[in-house]
Length: 120
Length: 107
Image (cartoon, rainbow over all chains, first blue to last red; front, side, top):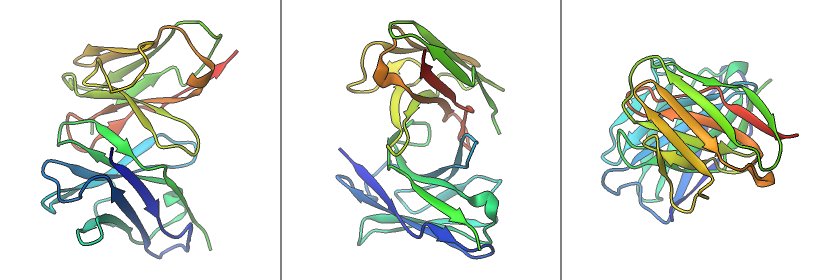
């Protein structure tokens, strides 16, 4: 059973870059066919898909965030990362990392989520 | 983007009641729809995928149906541990999108 765990700063200043890491156990970020995602939930809002990176390294982003977001993976540590630049208070959210079994497959495994607050 | 309209936004029911949540897509998504249960501080849990298939280990009281644009999620007999927020999620096309959630409470 794959397990995912988010880590990173809980507080980021406005205009800075939010960086989070997802550590994967019980599976490999290089396993064929899997997509590794970031999803967030802003206060009082629903879930928002940020983007994902394919096992091959290709990535896809939500157009609403595409100019500020990048997702990468570190195969040596079996991790993948989220970087969101020029953050504002509107980026305050619980950030989840997750895995799906393909482009048209459900997100079947999730981390517990980590709260990131953007504030000076 | 495909918009997912989920209703109701909140629901109060008694233990043993049947509960139903609906989700409507702004365009056809085939059966590429999942239902999640989210509890505070816990990893979201996939309950139903491909509109009607229960994930491994999910109690049989949870079910889903529908295709195209209209989908339904049901709990046949509400249990206290079912208190959570439930979301529908389309994965037919990018960007993936979610319903606004249904917060379920016990009367």
